[in-house]
Image 1 (cartoon, protein in one colour):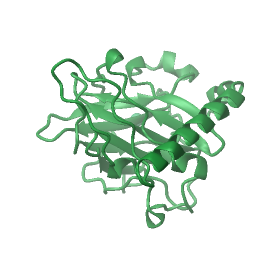
Image 2 (cartoon, rainbow, N blue to C red; image 1 turned 90 degrees about the vertical axis):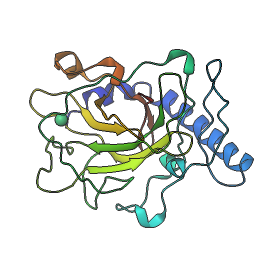
Image 3 (cartoon, helix red, strand yellow; image 1 turned 135 degrees about the horizontal axis):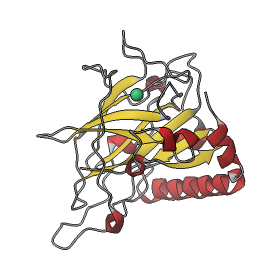
Image 4 (cartoon, protein in one colour; image 1 turned 45 degrees about the vertical axis):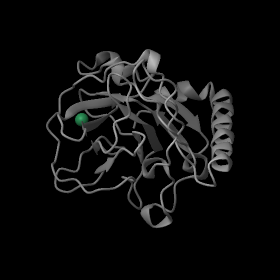
Length: 242
Ligand code: FE
């Protein structure tokens, strides 16, 4: 696994930890304000004519139950991380990108793709699914598949494959590992997002600061995660704009 970009990010590890700490404090405040259950912040703004989005508790933003975690529990620093607000003034449509050769239909429903003994850096991905008018899209099916830390796909089963749904406020959250490189490709996570009634958007998520991004013909900066380094792993944020 190529961690050179992560090493680059470690130069700002102290500020990243401060940011992560502030997020944890904010999450704790939300817990207090909303009756003891973490919820995703409401979308920051709505375009004229759109109804206001209430702050609604969402299954997608709640911490996983103990039984749902396969590798001994989501690290504490990431366990309370919730989806950041959507900046409706700066929406970038999520690009349609190739499915590639390794998609397998029928993935299991899960919010933690890790398995016991799996190597790799923990990555929690959070965000919202919205339409191009910034309205939250509830019940969108988010199907995820990726390579393991060594850059290998499981093409016989469903290792590092799974699907989840966005919550009532459009928020989603899943836990996985940072994928490894494989020949010709930079680090990426494949995703299909299907809103109720369709159509399906097939895309890929990428990591900032990876040198191979510039050499990958499929790479699209509009698919970049916003990464925050925490003591427990990486937090990646992304808004799917359908
Ligand atoms: Fe791939």
